[in-house]
Image (cartoon, rainbow, N blue to C red; front, side, top):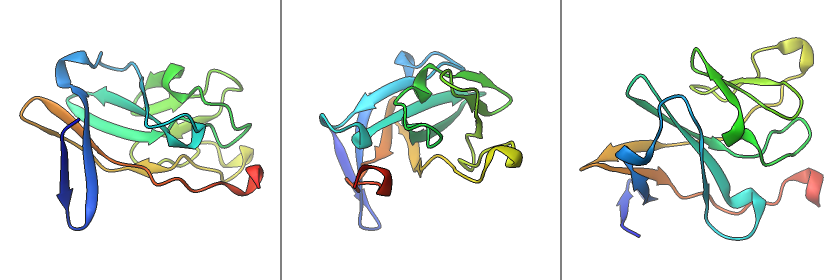
Length: 124
């Protein structure tokens, strides 16, 4: 796995740009802990990387979500998140949001900021 350090942040190459299907999610696992899973998306030649865990019911299914207008809808319970900000688009459902990670393309590879394991409050 190729890696780069930029401004003190570790970025790792996770796939080729050719392996991404527009408006479909791809799950990336860094180890066996679900908090180390992310989802990446390609929409109109832009790339987005968010946590794979829906903060509503803590299900690791965001990569399977329905993508529309730069949002992803969790297939488990229908909560919709803005891929640019991670925010829930329906404030009546609550203020929970997806964690976002930096992502970029270089020489045909997709690099993402490697997540750091942080055990969320709901698992403590």
